Image 1 (tube, rainbow, N blue to C red):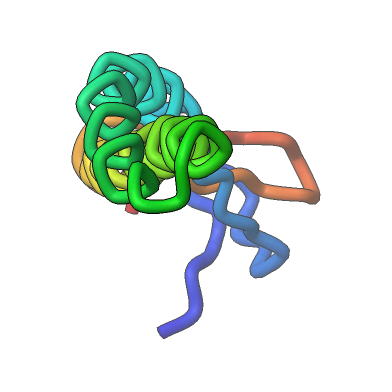
Image 2: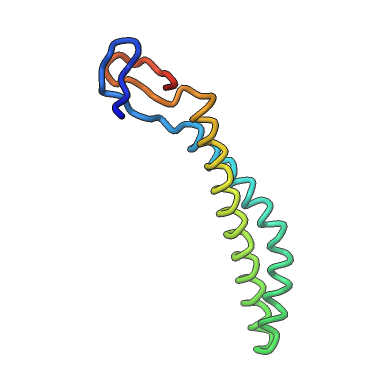
Length: 107
């Protein structure tokens, strides 16, 4: 199905995905913040796992657990935010833009 501009009839139409971009960035930031809180638990778990290697293992395990907690939180938040933004693009925002006349619209 080819989308055309309702204003000028041009077929030079692009999708903007602004909701998905903003939702993904916001979700990643929120997820990373939540992951940082969860990183403390990850650091404790990493320290317990690394304890068999002594003080160095505890330090490395703590850091690895904290980094892993932040990454998992950021990824999960980014995916959830992008999905929410995609729904906003589809149902609320003017997701299409005509390159010929600059008109933005929803299908």
